Image (cartoon, rainbow, N blue to C red; front, top):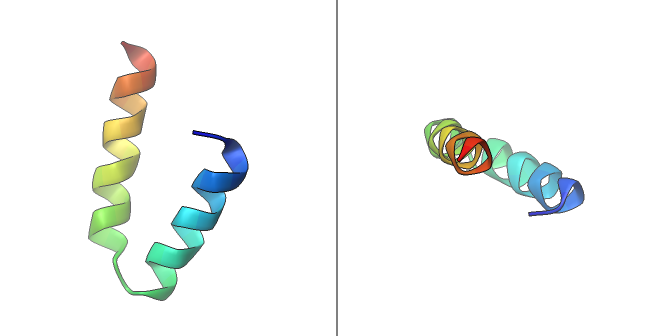
Length: 35
C-alpha cells in the first residue's frame, strides 16, 4: 500500500472516530511488512 494511500486512510478513519480500527489495521500492516 502506498504511503499516500495509508495517510489518507488514517485521516479518514480518525475523522470517522474509528481509532480502534486504525490501530488494528496498523498492527496488521506492520506484521505483513515484517513477514
